[in-house]
Length: 130
Image (cartoon, rainbow, N blue to C red):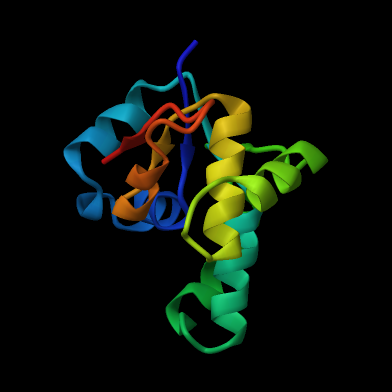
């Protein structure tokens, strides 16, 4: 079984703007047996909407929460611990939780964000796909 975890932007683009996805991202998503999304991505989207940074997403929040084409990734104590201790200079706690989820699941992360490439060599990190 092949599976991937989507970074927040990759998740939203896969649903609303697939042309923005890289060719590797599109191939990984369509070829995966399971596509995971972290609850942290739902938090990130709704937080940006509440702060007025993403007003266009507000009418779609209900369908994003109910969206059934992806599997909700587990947000566990192991993920939280990994996010806290991971040796990575990136300070964004949401990105750290998404990276930790990818590591704990053992699935590649679909993301445009090259910051994740600094995790190469980290035990359990598979890769970033774009």
